[in-house]
Image 1 (tube, one colour):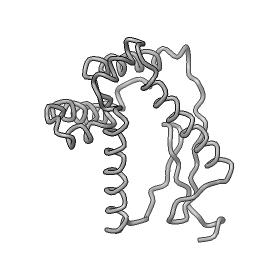
Image 2: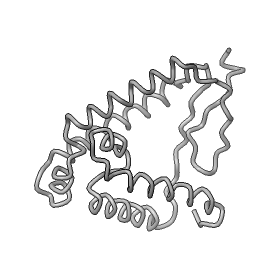
Image 3: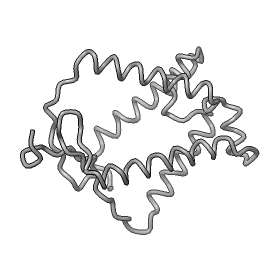
Length: 166
């Protein structure tokens, strides 16, 4: 596909219209995603970012461990987005990836409030939503309840999205 006819995949804020990709995911790609997810789960377990004690240490400002992990992730994500924009990165299907800048809106209350609620849930639960599957895979089956709650919350947001001010 030439650059002139390539479609665009927008990692979208609400204001941008994204094109639907026609790329079908093959079995080999699914297995690759599964392997990558398993590797990430092992990495989470071995680096102790799943540890309730590590998370409590972070929220009590007793250890730098989690701040180092989060800071490293932020640095990698920021530099990756910069590189994707600079190189005009594309998908394996030839579609160009566009990551539009999102302007700051209003006083930022919704961002601070959302971050506060997320952090409160993280502190009370002792787990970030991202590694819930790794926690369940590591044998902490009690995390099936937060997984169900997160799924229900996501579904509820999807149903109510048009009625919520953004």
